[in-house]
Length: 180
Picture (cartoon, rainbow, N blue to C red):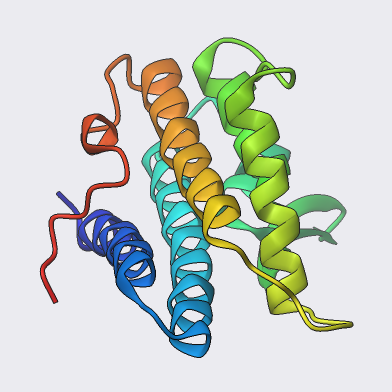
C-alpha cells in the first residue's frame, strides 16, 4: 500500500474517532470541536483517496491530454503550437473529479439520485460552510455522521466500480479502529 493510501485511511479513521469522541462529550464546545475536526478530516481523507485513485491511472498510455489534466490537476497550455501539460496547478472540484473517475474508469456515471450521492452533497455543503464561513456554521452530530457514512459509501462505490472490489474499511462503517 502506498504512503498516500495509508495516510488517507488514517485520516478517515481519525475522523470516525472524533465522531465517537463527540458522542461522549458532555460540553457543547468540546462536541463542536470534535465534529468540526471529524468533518474536515473526512473530506481530507476523501480527497486523498481520490488523488490516489487518480495517480493509479496516470500511468496509462491511452489517456487524452484532458484526462491527464484532470487526474494530475495540472493546467494545459499551447507550447510550440501544440497543447501540453504544465506544472501549473489546475484545481478541479472534488465532485467533478469523482464523477470523472467513475464514468471514465468505472464504466458509467454515478447515480445522482442515490442516498450516497445526496449524503455526500449534503456533507460537502456542511464542509463548505465550515471551511469558507460567511456566518457561524452549526455542524451537528447527525449531519456529521451522515456525511461520514456517505463518504465511506462513496469510496465503496468508487472501489467497486473502478477496482471491482469493496472499499476495505466499508464494512466497519463509522466504527474507528483508533483508541485515543
